[in-house]
Image (cartoon, rainbow, N blue to C red; front, top):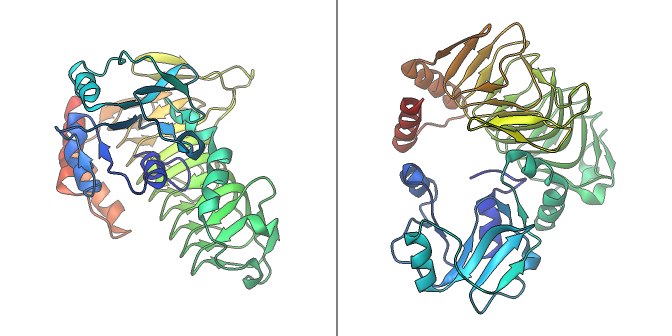
Length: 371
């Protein structure tokens, strides 16, 4: 369930269809964890009714569903099939035929943005947060905070029990700033919208952040630009992080920084599934999986992909592709010892009073054994 701003992809669907029954179709290995995390929803049901099928990596727009379809329709965005309205029989056939494109005449081009890659989500941050800001009430008035400067304060939304020290500048001239409840922002900090900071987060002194979204309980510091962090992660020390997507329970050591632009200004390539993907973008940073740690002074190249559960400690630039559960020390790679991984994860999560569930442990073991 990937974060797109203050919401995840799934949150957006729930917001658009609050009075509809929602079912989730996921890969078999994700079924148990998904049922646990979304116990209120059906997961991989056998009995399928007439209804809409919506791809899970699309930022769905309200305007596309002001009038719901009354006959079978295929939904497209820039020639990509992103959903459909199907009868019960067509739904059954689609599942049995391994989800090949249904033979349906009516087609509809939608505004909703298809995001096949994480960098596609990053490019939508301004639009996403502008849309989501409509759901937030004003909350605490800016005048409550002595010594804090607000630019375009009507575009700033502050939750309950937020603490902001004097000498903070919050600039919402380029987009909304949303600060969720119980967050603390220390002095000499510059925050520029569009920006979302989730509940119970911490922003250290002398921090610069813009065009980003962070889930709950993140610790933030240094220079951060065009970044999404799922939640429960630390990027709290000096160092630049730009045009990047970071998972949960990640810790970036002091001085960790990344490149998001090549010296020759050419498009950045990203390696995924043994293929080099041309992003057609000059600004691409780093993509970091859950439970990953970097040591002090780590330098990450543009277009780097670091799999979950990895540990990076190296004097130079590490490889641009690091597989999950990799212990990367000064250019040498070896597989993480699973018991040590779970021990570290326990202590990491315990600091925020969280625990891995049995189904999450089982999934991580299965992923580990595939490496």
